[in-house]
Amino acid sequence: MDEPLLGRRRMLELGAGFVGAATLAACAPAAQNPEGSAAGPASGANRTDGALPATSSAAPVPGTPAPRVEVTSGSFETKFRPGTPTGWSLATPVVAGYEQAKLPVALFLHGTGSDNRFLFDGLGIQAVLQRYLVDGGTPFAIASVDGGDSWWHPRTDGTDTESMLLEEFIPFLARQGLDLDRFGLFGLSMGGFGALLLASQGKIPGLRAVAAMSPAVWSDYDDGLEGAFDSPADFEANDVFALRPRLKDLPKRIDCGTDDPLLPSVKDYVAGLPGHVEGGYQPGGHEEAYWRLILPTLLSFLGRQLA
Image (cartoon, rainbow, N blue to C red):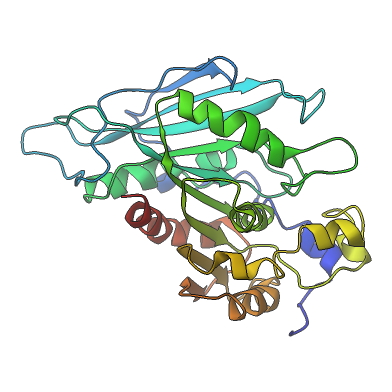
């Protein structure tokens, strides 16, 4: 494998991808997108109704309102993140003129130093999803939840965000009326690793696709990865390189910027994946601007697989 441009310890710090507090106005939430508040997994907060059947086009009928996106958010307490409130957000398409139906859903996993709101406040997923719907894309919901800097697997400090997802948050999404038989996973950096890991483990029966933006993946362990794994044994137990054969039949997309220090490791990972892999390597770094660039194409990929 090619040597990374930066040391592994430095690359662990890249997960959040923040560029100060700046966010392009074009990616801000649309003015008509109301944002509510609700409790978390134990409460069964209500989903907005009136969504388009997932097998149909979302192109608006002449004379009807354009598709829009409603966002709800909340937080909950979980035994898998002791003493830490866990926030979540859910973007739900609202398309006029169609019968109510269960929507498929894609779950986003964030990077280090970040939280569930980065997808919304940093990358403006509401506007990207609305544009996708206006262009006739298959409607699906998008969910995001806090995971801290856990790297989305069980840790020796008692944190277990993997179990939080499987036992609490994904069942919560089902209680919102979402269709878990058409489920997608995507994430960036640490979250890209988490999405690939969870997909490889085969623990989500309805998983239809996985996508990773600039995933933080490595083929071997060293001391520079101590923040991501508790020990060499922990790395081995969550080795996404070793788990690649399990992704053979799952639709997958992986993207990475050509100026990203993770690029050599990502290329090494992709080279050993069985089956077809969508995505590629485009100009850009480990940064918001790059992720905003590829998000529309990534949503199109997920929409095709969840239809």
